[in-house]
Length: 356
Image 1 (cartoon, helix red, strand yellow):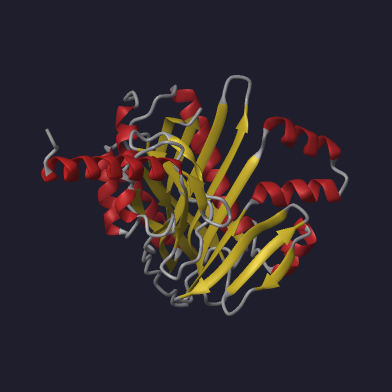
Image 2: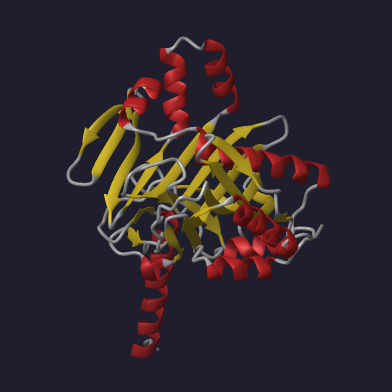
């Protein structure tokens, strides 16, 4: 008996679907922005929140047999990648609109920057620790002195002992404060002198940073904001090599050290506090596993204050966040301050962690 036309059509569609799925699973995908430029250092997550890797400096990654992955990047809206969104081997991410407000100069003594941060720790690509909270910072302009409020944060849900969490809270505070007021501008001269980078103009608003290891970063300016993405591991390790720092270089190679850095700031006169957001992602091998750390920091408020206003804001935060709060409450704060929401995959991974 001859097969019916409907049966043949169904069989053809099934085979085509299987072939398409196989092609998607095996193919190399490029993540691009709306102008078609590759997006480097985007995180690739499986549906259950496992870290499957990051895009390279040209925005490419391999699906590695997955039917569906989630792509996240601090500068763009999370994107779920399936066959339906792939066009000619590419997927396009939409930019986040941070809407940084201008600072109005007044006689007040303190420059205030309120920062919201997230800390993620992955072991062997599984999320094992999450920390999120609010950090007030002030800089005494008259005395050229950095000041801090108390470290107000929420431990949310995570799987780690309290002692380690406190240690990491202090580490995150020192790290973020150092970025904000301690390190200064990453200008071309500093990049050349400290990291031995070659800087090439690729057209209006686009610079490429490279060294003998290859391309290590990009600076793209558009829409009133600049975005720098740097493969800090390659930059630092070549600098170690060029300076003859053999012990540091050998240790980093032994650990499999990788460090990636993203900074977004407004295109007006630059100062270290004038950032919109920044993210640091580094990884290495310890005795037990492969470890990845990601710290994201978002500037939610820039303003000038006097001493009484600074103390009042510290007290307000202390009262609002003096005890642990739920992830839902922190997400309310995120929405109010236009902070990108956690992707569904990351949120599910956080909620699966043991509650403290």
